[in-house]
Amino acid sequence: PSAHAFFFLSEPTDARMASRPLVTVYSAESGEKSGAQVPLPAVFRAPIRPDVVGFVHDQMRANRRQAYGVYTLAGHQHSAESWGTGRAVARIPRISGGGTNRSGQGAFGNMCRKGRMFAPLKVWRRWHRRINQNQRRYATASALAASALPALVEARGHRISKVAQVPLVIDGALEKIKTTKKAVEVLKKVGAYDDVERCKDTRRVRAGQGKMRNRRHVIRRGPLVVYNKDEGIRQAFRNLPGVDLCSVHALNLLQLAPGGHLGRFVIWTADAFKALDSVFGTGRKKSTEKAGYNLPQAAMVNADLARIINSNEVQSAVRDAKPLPRKQGVHKNPLNNLNALLKLNPYAQTFKRNETLFAESRRKARAAKVAAARK
Image 1: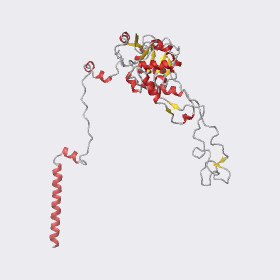
Image 2 (image 1 turned 90 degrees about the vertical axis):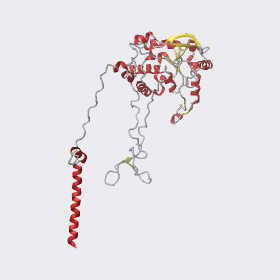
Image 3 (image 1 turned 180 degrees about the vertical axis):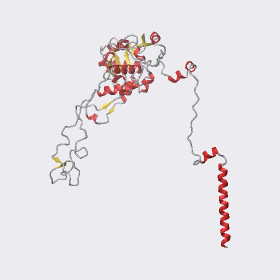
Image 4 (image 1 turned 60 degrees about the vertical axis):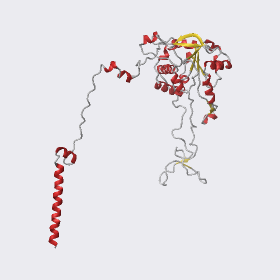
C-alpha cells in the first residue's frame, strides 16, 4: 500500500480477510524499510463510532475523580434564631446579640452572607460510573481503527508529514532501546520527532487552581508508543514531552482518544502489531485474550447511503415517483371575501361599481334640489 493511505475494501467479510493489505515494517536502526511486511490486523477495519468513543471516554474520566466536599458545619457556626412573625422582617434565622452590625443579620440560608451553600457537597456523592464491558471494547476498537486513517490523525493536530506510513510499525529492536538519546534518534529517523517538538512548544502554566495543586504545567499529547514486551522501552521514552507508552495487552481509551477525539498518532512495535489479532480477534476467529469476544461488525459495508439509493441497480427496481396530491385550499366565504365572490361572479365588481356611481348621482341630485329650494 502507498504511504498515508489504506483503502478498505467493500467486499463481504471472507473476501476482505483474503485480501488484507500488508503494512511495511521499518528499521529502528536506519529508519528505512526493513524488508519485512505484516498483514493489517482486523481491528483496523472496525466501525468508527465517535458517539460510542465520546460516551465511554466521559464515563472513564469520571472514574479517576477523587471525592471532595465542604465542611459539614460551614455556614452554621452561629448562634442564630428566627425573630418569628410580627416584626415586618423575613423569618430567616438572624445573628443574636447586639453592639455590632453583625447582630441581626441573616444566617444559615444559602441566600445569606456567610451562609452555607445550597445542597452542600458530600463525599458520598456517586463519583464513579459503571461502563458496559462490550461498550469499552467497542470504543477501543473504534479508536484503533481511527488511528490508521491519516486524515483523522492530521485533523487531531499531529504532525506526520514526514512519516512514511500510517500506521507506523517499527521492528522489534525498538523494544530493546534503553536510553532517551537513542529513542530520539529513532523518532527522527522515522520522521515522528516533529510531533514531539510540537508538544514541547505547547508546554505552559495551567489556567486555574490546579497550578497550586502539584499540576502546574499542561502539555499537548504527542505519539503513543505501543509495545508487546518492555525490555527498556518505557525507560527510554517516558521522559519525552507528550509521548505516552502502553502495552498492547492493556490498551487504554484515554490514551488512544484523549479528550474523546479520535485519531491519535500511534507508533507500533512489530510484535505488538502482530498481537492485535489475538487481543481483539479477526471477525472469523474470536479473541484469545478476551473470553468469547469478537470484533464488532458494521451494519453497512458501504455507508454512502445516497450513492446506494441513486445507483442504477436500485433505481431500476423502484417504482416511479407518485405525483403530489392536490393541495386543498381554505374555503372562503364569498359574502365576506371579495376575491372569492369574483371567482363565482365576475360581474359582481361591475355591479358594485354601478351601485356606487348610482348612489353618488342620487346624492348630488338631492344636494342640488336642496340648494335650489333654499334660494
